[in-house]
Image (cartoon, rainbow, N blue to C red):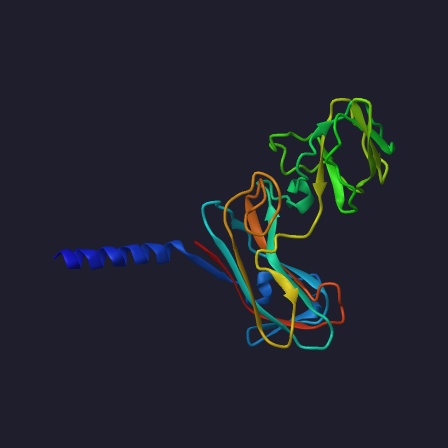
Length: 263
């Protein structure tokens, strides 16, 4: 009797686990938003892509930080041109707006505030502390920030980076690479952020003539930052995104068996 109950219990757990998992496939043209329609064809379940293109899935999925989201696809090149493939998630907030890398990818220990007003068109800002600010072309900064990161995702992003961070007395002078696009009052909190690509959970790489599996999983929610294994702060929904033959419109690629498992 006990053995029978044990077997029934195991079957129930297995069934529950099976029911809890959801696998969605993306192997039809209708599954994707394709900006260059003539660049993508489908035959026998295989997409052929003859240009550099970004493809975003037509379906969006709710994000539950307690669940695991696993992407999988097979890809290869069919020519001699260099073909790069990127596979991941496109993120949205609760209002359906994109969450880009620059909105959440903070540069640590760069929270500070303006000690004097800065006007639109200025190329200099006075701040309390810029000792950790870095000179990088792909860095910008956000304003109306909060050291608790409650401002993330912060859409008040100013691109362009800095030319110099110099301490002068009890404050710091930041020389900007581009003129300010807005007026900022004294006391406005600012923080450096880094720009970048999408959430490449499914990985990326150069294709060869053999089928290569691109796969990876994401679970949980970051408090700050942007990476491939946890969702960025504020993420409510996701679509899938593929960058195919990226950077080379002469390349060709084939993709098949695209799926998302949620469990």
